[in-house]
Length: 177
Image 1 (cartoon, rainbow, N blue to C red):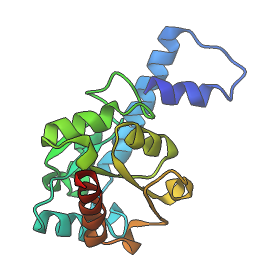
Image 2 (image 1 turned 180 degrees about the vertical axis):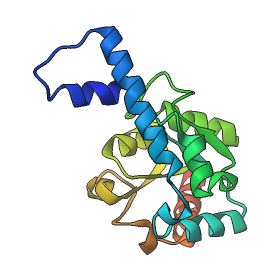
Image 3 (image 1 turned 135 degrees about the horizontal axis):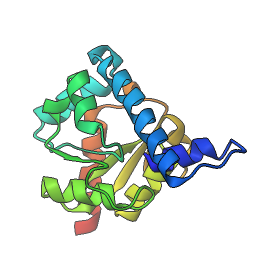
Image 4 (image 1 turned 120 degrees about the horizontal axis):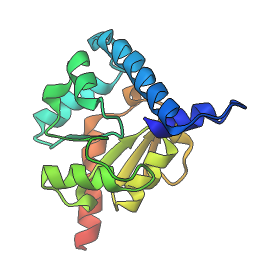
């Protein structure tokens, strides 16, 4: 919360003390939580549901790693909470992306080695965090321009769960050869 507020305040010429910043951060978060209450399953991005359903059907464990402390509420509002076997969010973190902490916590909660994970990420800092965790990464949206991503796609509706499973399988075979 405070990091986001600091970014917004960089654009002002006014200075604020710690107490004022804390009040603004609380107010900003209250506005954000009100917006979250308006979320519905209609806000799920194209391609997300088919991938989640296919991964589940194939017995693939799924986690979400987000710096937001509102992750559980957001997942509940859009109807995705039941698809994730583990959640690592801002309530668990001491470091933010590009530090790999959030993804390492998610992998640990899944009981999966980081090298056996594939992260779907829409920000460059997240791509770097996934790579630092020794995970494969699909860069989508703005992160599709990150040449360091293992795979890149403009959106999830052009990617299949089968492709993602194959990428992980191919890496595991290469590691064992």
